[in-house]
Image (cartoon, rainbow, N blue to C red):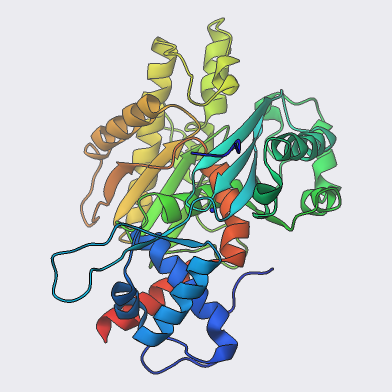
Length: 415
């Protein structure tokens, strides 16, 4: 019995598209297969007729593609839906056991390694905490952790691993003082190529993306993405980060740092101008606990097992909410986002309190001329960064780029 009982570069749009919206040439069959898989992932389950309608591909092309994908084990059949005219409709779903992927989250206080399946569920995971991250320790955790998790899989399961995706902060050497690292200790990261070093020691293709961007991508793919085509995203980790989604695709900007949001200027409790990260970050709560003689270590043992620290936690939540409300209004004054999504490396009850407090604080601000977005909780949760990292190999090999996917859907549904 398997321990998992319970699924090279980014795809390029095809050179020639059929006028109906789909691509029927043999040379772009792989793209059409990705499009079908992406549609099924997006909607959860679709029949052949649904896919033909949504993709613009011909019914014959869809039938051929779905036979291939089912034979390869990527799609599985649901129960026939009866009661309509003609043959019963058979919904097709992604097979969770068809593909697996490793995801790594590297934070300033802890690291996570997960094995994720084809539908975004974490099957296995490891967690490590530290005072601050050092390259050789991270390298050892990832390589030894992969061997440990591989040892829990059978040969068939190991053969289905698509790759390894790393979600890590860019410029890890920044803000070393805030996390209490000794002077110069984090400078070693400046010349350390984490992606290349890990790739040299594992047998998988390795991908790298900013940790907050990865979390935003996980929310887009596995969370509220289908409900909100445009949203600004806040992920509260050791340092707060974020992302921007426009037209159901992540907008990263020319340098890849669009939506970083941490440096956004906001007013502090005394009216002084501060960066958002100086208020709405977990390291701030950590320092508040230390100042009151409370051990902050439980913050890093497990994101799901925080205790209620009482007064200092409530003070931090209120300060964070005030800062987030200002940041959301600032973002909404530039782009009319449909939602502002708040998530972080903490339990659901903490996230809920932060969101409720942020909604309350936003109502106090001058909103004249501002169309406020819905302020909502993230769905993916504390492991969003690791899940986003694990998504990178799966999208690279099996699914379409989100921007291409939604263009295809829009074209087909207008037809």
